[in-house]
Image (cartoon, rainbow, N blue to C red; front, side, top):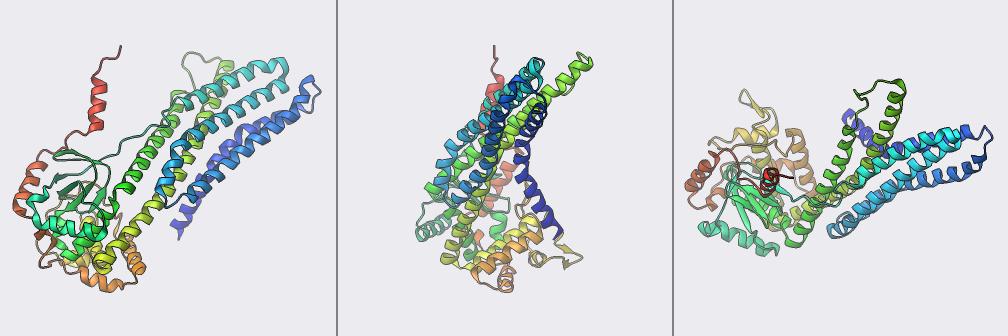
Length: 466
């Protein structure tokens, strides 16, 4: 309960961060104008106009997160429309943010002139210069860039012609789901199934065009119905059009996140203090100047980041809806009970190296009951933290899947306790000993082949720039 409250508070603080930053300079401007109104001056006629400008800028700034959240929410479950809006949207968001930031700094500078007369021109010039530098840092970032998504997998590429039973199984599943056969089939010792349209660097090099990964350790525990149910989800994920659209969307979002991070870290280039001078006047001027630059940079990064985060949230919800759709198709073709039972076996194998599911020959969690049934040594090597997070989270996911399909969790758990099926899914692989020897030989390299992005960075670093 306490954790949920903390999460809600953090989420609310993230939502309020941008409005609070937007109100800093307008609040200072209004205080200066209020002070200037108490003293007669030839420039007092500017006060009303400046106050209206402040209200307009604040109105646009506060309306922006509402509109962005509404648009992103309306585009959920439609990756094509989301991509079509996101591509030009990053430029619109950055341009509008630049206008708002420049307007806030310009209005603040004008308010200082109204309040200070001729003496305020120097301060106003410093404010305008600081705001301009912050604006330039925002605009020079590579906002619209697209980062190629390249994953890593400690696996080898399979030739389906060498595994006729596996090929026949995959072709039959593809026909039932009305999808195409994946271009690349990988096999390895990591325990989780996955499918992705992005490029993957494996032991045999970099492969592109869609990847379906089959974990040999988990396949030993699955019967063929469970295997087909797990693979069917991957095949649905790799549907060509949707997979390509979601891949481009993720790559463009990754580029936008990198641009926002670059803008945010640029503030570290402007130190608060300088070792060149310690004169009190210059120290105060520098502090104010740097504070303004940093405020503009942080505001720009938060403004742009809010747009990206709103679409990331919508994309994550779209991905979950796509997964549910794929799970429904898998369950309809292969049986929902086999889908859940296969998931439980995978979760057990994925978590057993990080959590003690069995202690003193007793299961500490219901997943441990599955682990205790595994008497044949299963060779696997987890290379990264488990995507199942922890046993409690995994069990909650399994229970939610059972509730979704109207199944009994106890029944599916009983099916998952059969970890020595005959025949097992691993029997679909021909000459398994040769395949495992090939994997063992590849893993002795202890490093993956260099992927395209790393090669490009290395070549750039090796070129002498004049």
